[in-house]
Structures are given as structure tokens and as C-alpha cells.
Image 1 (cartoon, rainbow, N blue to C red):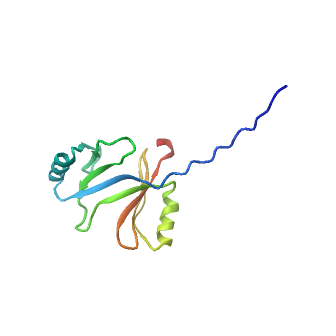
Image 2: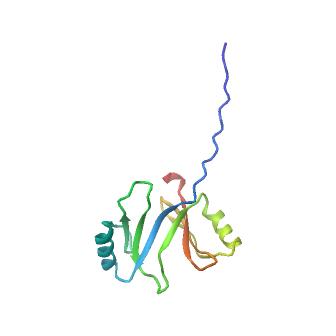
Image 3: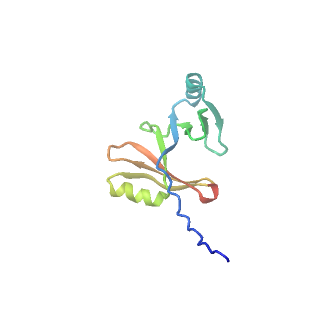
Length: 136
């Protein structure tokens, strides 16, 4: 006797909306690197590319966020927290529907994913991040 079993359809896993990255702007990148290195023991590695951008290794477990350090782009440029979402497009629409603003639309980071920079109704900046399917 043969028994047939139905193949279970796997539901797409929902991406938790959690903090996955932060960015610190600095007027003096070397000074900021020294400060955070001495204060917390964070390690800095330059990302390849034309822009001076440093990966911050916070030394935590793999599920704790690392960050980036960059030159301040404007006087009002503050720390930006990146939140993991399943779709930048979907969340950009939700931000606007809920009274927020989009400062920088959906932007690709090759082989990694997409992000958009937003403002909440209180003018706090944050970013939504969608991991590239090939990078999962």
C-alpha cells in the first residue's frame, strides 16, 4: 500500500521589522573613529568605492546590528537607523500614507539590497532596507 502525502506549501517568511544597521555622520571621520574605538572597542573597515564609508564592527553577536560611519552630508544630518522590511516599495507607500516623507527614494546597493531614507511625522530620519533575494 502506498501512501501519498501532499506537499506542504511553504508560506513566505515575513521579514521582522527590526533594527539591522545604523549610520553615524561625522564632521571629522578620523576623530569619530578614534572616539568610538576607544569608548566601545568598535572596529572600522573601509568599504570599497568612491565614497569614504566605513563599516563599524560593533563586536556583538551576529544578530546585533553593525553600522556605518560617513562624512556628514549636511548640518542637519543625524544618525540614521535602518529597519529591515520585506518590500521597500510597500513601506515607502505606508510611510507617506501615515504622514511621513521620503527623503531619498528606493536606491539599490548592488548584490545587497535596496533602501529608502524617510522622515517620520516628527521629522526623525530612518531608513527601510530590503535585502536582495540573491543575498538572502
